[in-house]
Image (cartoon, rainbow over all chains, first blue to last red; front, side, top):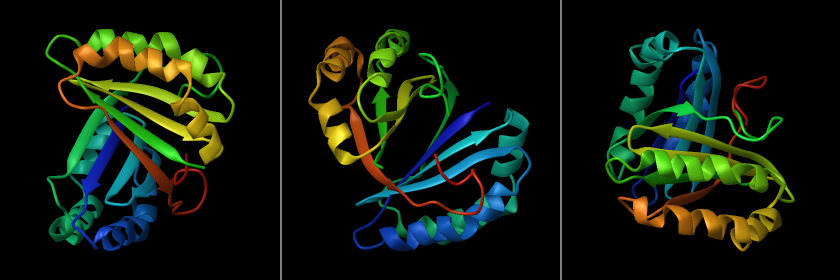
Length: 101
Length: 101
């Protein structure tokens, strides 16, 4: 189950519009096939989305789908650096639930 | 409840030793007061840890404690860029469990 960390560094004063785009469109992503997590976070000059997908095919379909294209178009001008999308594998550690999403 | 995304970009051929340091020491972090999540992921040239803490005081105690110092010392030479630690706020979206860690 791939985990994706998407990091958007924002221009001064423009974080909130990026955050609002993700807040607005996240429910549509949650409805996509195979979406297990799509969680929005923000710091002073960045928005970071933590994603978990059921499989690579679901992630590929999301990446080729209309919702992410809408989000990218809505946020592109507000970014201070290229969008960083890290597609990662989980390495569960410890026991219990603290070591896995 | 603060969420932290720690990103370690690794030198060529040295990702696995960074990953192993986090795998080895994560159970000790899980035992720290207020640790809700400490989840290790990796891509080809990076290790990314997703953390969730009960409150800022717990995160501060972790940051000032011995375990993270040990991890930082064990991994420093293998990094290709400065460690990026983003302390973030969650912005829950949607309904149900897909929009929050």
